[in-house]
Length: 203
Image (cartoon, rainbow, N blue to C red):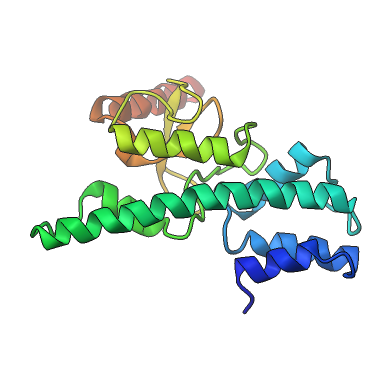
Protein backbone atom coordinates (compact mmCIF):
# COMPACT_ATOMS: atom_id res chain seq x y z
CA UNK A 1 0.00 0.00 0.00
CA UNK A 2 1.47 3.35 -1.06
CA UNK A 3 2.27 5.90 1.64
CA UNK A 4 1.48 9.60 1.63
CA UNK A 5 4.80 10.69 0.11
CA UNK A 6 4.64 8.08 -2.64
CA UNK A 7 1.11 9.19 -3.54
CA UNK A 8 2.19 12.84 -3.49
CA UNK A 9 4.92 12.02 -6.02
CA UNK A 10 2.27 10.51 -8.28
CA UNK A 11 0.20 13.70 -8.03
CA UNK A 12 3.26 15.71 -9.08
CA UNK A 13 4.27 13.45 -11.97
CA UNK A 14 3.55 15.44 -15.18
CA UNK A 15 3.86 12.26 -17.25
CA UNK A 16 0.91 10.64 -15.49
CA UNK A 17 -2.67 10.74 -16.67
CA UNK A 18 -4.64 13.54 -15.00
CA UNK A 19 -7.26 11.10 -13.78
CA UNK A 20 -4.52 9.08 -12.02
CA UNK A 21 -3.04 12.24 -10.50
CA UNK A 22 -6.46 13.23 -9.17
CA UNK A 23 -7.01 9.70 -7.85
CA UNK A 24 -3.63 9.84 -6.08
CA UNK A 25 -4.61 13.10 -4.39
CA UNK A 26 -7.82 11.46 -3.16
CA UNK A 27 -5.75 8.53 -1.88
CA UNK A 28 -3.53 10.98 0.04
CA UNK A 29 -6.64 11.78 2.07
CA UNK A 30 -6.75 8.18 3.27
CA UNK A 31 -3.41 8.89 4.97
CA UNK A 32 -4.05 12.45 6.17
CA UNK A 33 -7.42 14.20 6.27
CA UNK A 34 -7.83 16.65 9.17
CA UNK A 35 -11.58 17.15 8.61
CA UNK A 36 -12.23 13.55 7.59
CA UNK A 37 -11.95 12.30 4.01
CA UNK A 38 -15.06 13.83 2.43
CA UNK A 39 -14.90 17.18 4.24
CA UNK A 40 -11.17 17.61 3.52
CA UNK A 41 -11.77 16.85 -0.18
CA UNK A 42 -14.64 19.36 -0.25
CA UNK A 43 -12.39 21.96 1.40
CA UNK A 44 -9.54 21.45 -1.08
CA UNK A 45 -11.91 21.57 -4.05
CA UNK A 46 -13.50 24.81 -2.84
CA UNK A 47 -10.21 26.55 -2.08
CA UNK A 48 -8.51 25.58 -5.34
CA UNK A 49 -11.38 25.69 -7.83
CA UNK A 50 -11.56 21.97 -8.52
CA UNK A 51 -14.89 20.46 -9.50
CA UNK A 52 -15.31 17.53 -7.07
CA UNK A 53 -16.31 15.10 -9.83
CA UNK A 54 -13.92 16.39 -12.52
CA UNK A 55 -11.74 13.43 -13.55
CA UNK A 56 -9.19 15.61 -15.36
CA UNK A 57 -8.78 18.82 -13.37
CA UNK A 58 -6.26 21.56 -14.10
CA UNK A 59 -2.88 20.17 -12.95
CA UNK A 60 -1.93 23.54 -11.43
CA UNK A 61 -5.02 23.36 -9.22
CA UNK A 62 -4.17 19.80 -8.21
CA UNK A 63 -0.66 20.91 -7.27
CA UNK A 64 -1.96 23.84 -5.22
CA UNK A 65 -4.31 21.50 -3.34
CA UNK A 66 -1.46 19.06 -2.68
CA UNK A 67 0.79 21.90 -1.47
CA UNK A 68 -1.86 22.95 1.04
CA UNK A 69 -2.32 19.38 2.24
CA UNK A 70 1.44 18.81 2.59
CA UNK A 71 1.94 22.03 4.56
CA UNK A 72 -0.79 21.00 6.99
CA UNK A 73 0.65 17.52 7.32
CA UNK A 74 4.07 18.99 8.16
CA UNK A 75 2.46 21.09 10.92
CA UNK A 76 0.73 18.03 12.38
CA UNK A 77 3.77 15.74 12.15
CA UNK A 78 5.89 18.32 13.97
CA UNK A 79 3.26 18.45 16.70
CA UNK A 80 3.15 14.65 16.96
CA UNK A 81 6.94 14.53 17.30
CA UNK A 82 6.79 16.97 20.23
CA UNK A 83 3.89 15.04 21.74
CA UNK A 84 5.84 11.76 21.57
CA UNK A 85 8.85 13.39 23.23
CA UNK A 86 6.68 14.73 26.05
CA UNK A 87 5.07 11.33 26.66
CA UNK A 88 8.51 9.71 26.74
CA UNK A 89 9.67 12.19 29.38
CA UNK A 90 6.51 11.66 31.41
CA UNK A 91 6.90 7.89 31.33
CA UNK A 92 10.52 8.26 32.40
CA UNK A 93 9.30 10.36 35.32
CA UNK A 94 6.76 7.69 36.30
CA UNK A 95 3.61 9.22 34.75
CA UNK A 96 2.39 6.08 33.01
CA UNK A 97 -1.36 6.64 33.13
CA UNK A 98 -2.54 8.65 30.11
CA UNK A 99 -4.66 11.74 30.67
CA UNK A 100 -7.89 12.63 28.86
CA UNK A 101 -5.80 14.70 26.47
CA UNK A 102 -3.57 11.72 25.67
CA UNK A 103 -6.58 9.47 25.12
CA UNK A 104 -7.95 11.92 22.51
CA UNK A 105 -4.57 12.21 20.84
CA UNK A 106 -4.14 8.44 20.56
CA UNK A 107 -7.40 8.22 18.59
CA UNK A 108 -6.22 10.88 16.12
CA UNK A 109 -2.64 9.66 15.61
CA UNK A 110 -1.61 10.31 12.02
CA UNK A 111 -3.82 13.37 11.60
CA UNK A 112 -7.05 11.79 10.38
CA UNK A 113 -10.06 13.56 11.79
CA UNK A 114 -8.16 15.80 14.22
CA UNK A 115 -10.67 18.54 13.40
CA UNK A 116 -13.42 16.24 12.10
CA UNK A 117 -16.39 17.88 10.41
CA UNK A 118 -19.51 15.76 10.70
CA UNK A 119 -21.15 17.57 7.78
CA UNK A 120 -18.69 17.32 4.84
CA UNK A 121 -19.99 20.59 3.38
CA UNK A 122 -19.43 22.59 6.59
CA UNK A 123 -15.79 23.17 7.48
CA UNK A 124 -13.35 26.02 8.17
CA UNK A 125 -12.45 28.20 5.19
CA UNK A 126 -8.88 29.04 6.25
CA UNK A 127 -5.89 27.03 4.94
CA UNK A 128 -5.56 23.63 6.61
CA UNK A 129 -2.18 24.49 8.14
CA UNK A 130 -3.60 27.60 9.81
CA UNK A 131 -6.54 25.62 11.21
CA UNK A 132 -4.16 23.03 12.66
CA UNK A 133 -1.92 25.71 14.17
CA UNK A 134 -4.95 27.18 15.93
CA UNK A 135 -6.07 23.75 17.09
CA UNK A 136 -2.60 22.92 18.43
CA UNK A 137 -2.40 26.29 20.20
CA UNK A 138 -5.74 25.47 21.83
CA UNK A 139 -4.54 22.04 22.90
CA UNK A 140 -1.35 23.48 24.35
CA UNK A 141 -2.99 26.38 26.19
CA UNK A 142 -5.51 24.21 28.03
CA UNK A 143 -9.31 24.13 28.21
CA UNK A 144 -11.31 27.20 27.23
CA UNK A 145 -14.86 28.23 26.51
CA UNK A 146 -14.77 28.62 22.72
CA UNK A 147 -13.79 26.80 19.54
CA UNK A 148 -9.99 27.00 19.17
CA UNK A 149 -10.27 27.30 15.38
CA UNK A 150 -12.79 30.15 14.92
CA UNK A 151 -13.28 31.40 18.52
CA UNK A 152 -17.05 30.77 18.23
CA UNK A 153 -18.77 30.19 21.56
CA UNK A 154 -21.83 28.70 19.89
CA UNK A 155 -21.07 25.04 20.48
CA UNK A 156 -23.74 22.35 20.65
CA UNK A 157 -23.58 18.76 21.89
CA UNK A 158 -24.43 16.18 19.21
CA UNK A 159 -25.09 12.59 20.35
CA UNK A 160 -25.66 11.33 16.81
CA UNK A 161 -22.50 12.02 14.79
CA UNK A 162 -22.02 10.01 11.60
CA UNK A 163 -18.51 8.79 12.47
CA UNK A 164 -16.40 8.17 15.56
CA UNK A 165 -16.46 9.88 17.93
CA UNK A 166 -20.19 9.11 17.81
CA UNK A 167 -21.01 12.01 20.13
CA UNK A 168 -19.29 15.34 20.68
CA UNK A 169 -19.41 19.11 20.84
CA UNK A 170 -19.82 20.66 17.38
CA UNK A 171 -18.89 24.27 16.62
CA UNK A 172 -21.79 26.11 15.00
CA UNK A 173 -19.32 28.53 13.40
CA UNK A 174 -16.82 26.35 11.51
CA UNK A 175 -18.38 22.91 11.87
CA UNK A 176 -15.57 20.99 13.57
CA UNK A 177 -16.16 18.46 16.31
CA UNK A 178 -14.30 20.34 19.04
CA UNK A 179 -11.76 18.10 20.84
CA UNK A 180 -12.87 17.44 24.41
CA UNK A 181 -9.50 18.49 25.93
CA UNK A 182 -9.83 22.09 24.67
CA UNK A 183 -13.19 22.74 26.37
CA UNK A 184 -13.80 23.44 30.03
CA UNK A 185 -16.43 21.41 31.85
CA UNK A 186 -18.58 24.57 31.91
CA UNK A 187 -18.34 24.88 28.11
CA UNK A 188 -19.36 21.24 27.73
CA UNK A 189 -22.34 21.73 30.01
CA UNK A 190 -23.35 24.83 28.05
CA UNK A 191 -23.17 22.84 24.79
CA UNK A 192 -25.45 20.18 26.27
CA UNK A 193 -27.94 22.83 27.43
CA UNK A 194 -28.00 24.25 23.87
CA UNK A 195 -28.87 20.75 22.63
CA UNK A 196 -31.68 20.45 25.19
CA UNK A 197 -33.12 23.82 24.13
CA UNK A 198 -32.98 22.75 20.47
CA UNK A 199 -34.87 19.55 21.29
CA UNK A 200 -37.45 21.46 23.35
CA UNK A 201 -38.05 23.92 20.52
CA UNK A 202 -39.01 21.16 18.05
CA UNK A 203 -41.05 19.12 20.55
